[in-house]
Image (cartoon, rainbow, N blue to C red; front, side, top):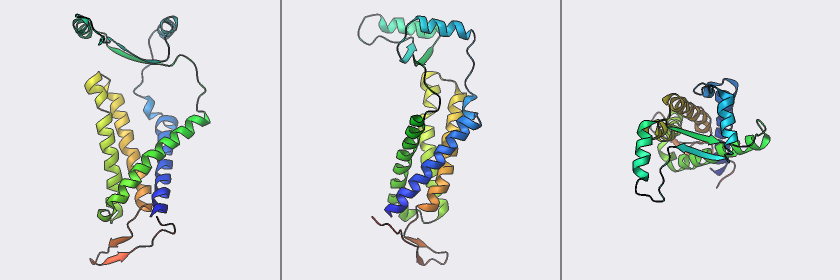
Amino acid sequence: MTGRIISGALVGALILFVAGFLWYGLLGIGDKPFSQLPNEDAVVGTLVDGQLTSGTYIYPRMDRSGGATSMEEWTALHEKGPLFEIRYHAGGESVGTAGMFVAGFVHFLIATLIIAMLMRMALPSLGSFGRRLMFVTMLGVFAAVFIQPSGPIWFYYPWDRAISDLAYGIISAFLAGLGMAAIIKPAVSIASDGTLRRQERDAVTA
């Protein structure tokens, strides 16, 4: 079974890699929620002149280190607006480096290995291709629904970005599930006549 777990995870990671390239790269669907900055040169110039170091900045930010009025001041600024978050990278970077692609694939592989191990534990209940596909897809649905809407709900992020990333997560999980469900199979399944049917085992066993 180890051979199927590893090969299934590798195929799933490859599918996720290709899906991400299509969604965010070739088709550019993931770019649609992003807007162009008005007065771009002036805004960028202000950030550069401010000598920001790379990091994440939020306004207004509550001072939790103390101060009797820090909560009151934050509340007043929060109610007045504007509210924004900046993820700032001070230096430039090469586009699409080999290191980035390798790190991205490793990230996907870790995720699909986790899914593959969960599939292995659940295989007695996943005798059919459809059940295994649904299992992988629902894991993706859970992750996407749990993570993506939190931005708009708690931090006032626009919903268009969350919906785009939500759709990407669910669609890519379904596509990865097609490959993984075809490879990671139980050793014994139930035939249509209700009898047990032994499938071909892995050449590599645990």
